[in-house]
Image 1 (cartoon, rainbow, N blue to C red):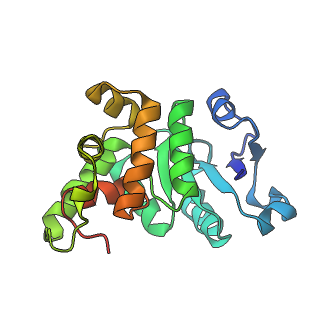
Image 2: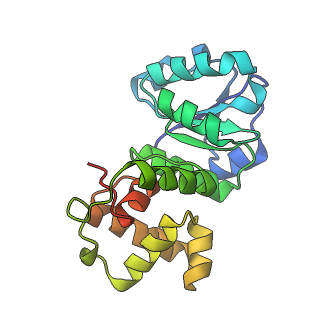
Amino acid sequence: MVKQFFVTPGGNIRNRWQEAFPEASVVTRLMQLPEASKASPGVLWLDFSAIAQLDRVSMLEESVGLGWPVIVLAATPSESEAFQLLNIGARGYCHVNAHPQQLCEVGTAVEHGGLWMPPNLMQRLLALSLRVVPQDSAVGPDLSALTSRELMVAREVAKGGNNREVASALGITERTVKAHLSTIFEKLEVRDRVQLALCTNNVSTR
């Protein structure tokens, strides 16, 4: 199991973090990460809500430099900050008080090499991509490889829906949504929801 480390100056783990990852560790500074763990990287969660504005970028750069996948927890997620931090190397960006189930979703995506951001920001990214990148069905994935239900799930994800919203829209369970997404990712050879959204809209991710 991949180890989760939360970096927060106060050193206190929030209930939602602990509910999502009961075995998670908390440190107040990067230098406190156990040497043994550095040899077998886990996932770093940076609590930007408790980190001074002037220190955030440098801390993210240092974290990315460790070779760990990094997720940023923000008090007020914004489009501009999301794109800035993702450009630096963050692999995930979400609200510091996100629901435990969503935290697990973020962690799973990042652990598998994917990218995660809030649905509304993903929609903005998709809209931007559709404006600046030519759509070309010839280079897109073969969506015919998907079953009708898988295609419905893919289209709901492309709208920016999270697992709960997709499940509600299609009248299925969240567990079923997760199972469909695993199969969809494998069939289309994509790593995360962002790539899936782009592929579903015929934007090449190659």
